[in-house]
Image 1 (cartoon, rainbow, N blue to C red):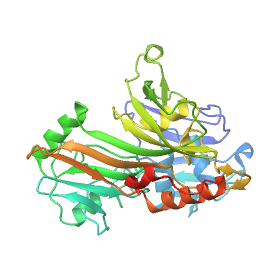
Image 2 (cartoon, helix red, strand yellow):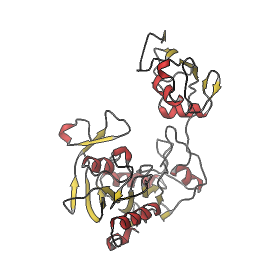
Image 3 (cartoon, helix red, strand yellow):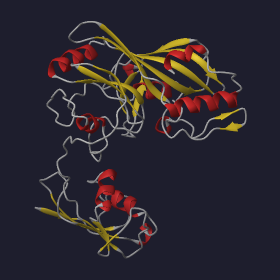
Image 4 (cartoon, helix red, strand yellow):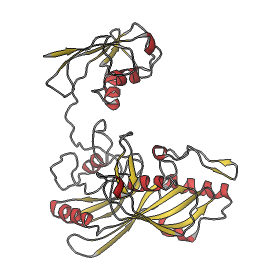
Length: 359
């Protein structure tokens, strides 16, 4: 049985006419063409936004991919995502399924902090995704590791060989990779039992009344904005997971404070959502409420274009030798430059010696 959406039916506030034939018994994205007729109310809307709003079975990322591949056409002609649609135009979408993702070798330079026969620690730059996922199959850390001929542990997920923990795309710093299954099992257990010490540097907005503190707010997916997480007392969210973040002030820089952060659990966006919940968002983290620009003593600093969050140090017991390993990732150059500019604008004479170990 098929269902025909006509102009008398609406699944969105848009008034676009929909000519879509979708099998009722199949919830997956159909390979059948989707045809949309632009109404006067939609005239002037960007093509990518129009298609995403009127095709709820397609994610925004998938719509972008289809447009880039020429599979979204206006009156039979491929168009750009930014093109404005006009009333009466017919938009045809061919939602061909994605080719299966796989981890492929790419020649991408890596900053190796430590390496032996069992593991390797990389200083990941901001902007690099750890492994392939929906809409992201190139330029990942896994691609780069395979590109250097790296032997990696194998897991049930073929897109994540060697991966025992992750860093957000725009978080830089030390990330631990397992070269074999023995090391992977041991390190995974160490992360699970919180035996690996993870130290971060975070520049957050505002000042604190105390020199150190602890955040114990449970974390769950934000029900309204699915790209975000939310933090609240555990008793107020049945589906939230316990999380603990400890912090110590390293230095104040006018409108912002540099913190050393100890992560005791590894929830998605944990540091970012915890400090956002305290009304001290990580500088540059627009998703969690940070200002686009900091202003120090009437000086407007340039946008950072990433969050000021850096995985500065990993300390753990080696999975085979049982020796203690501590590795420090130097502060990313763009973060050091930003901190120096902030210090100058805020009238801080120099970056305190307490930062020496991280620079």
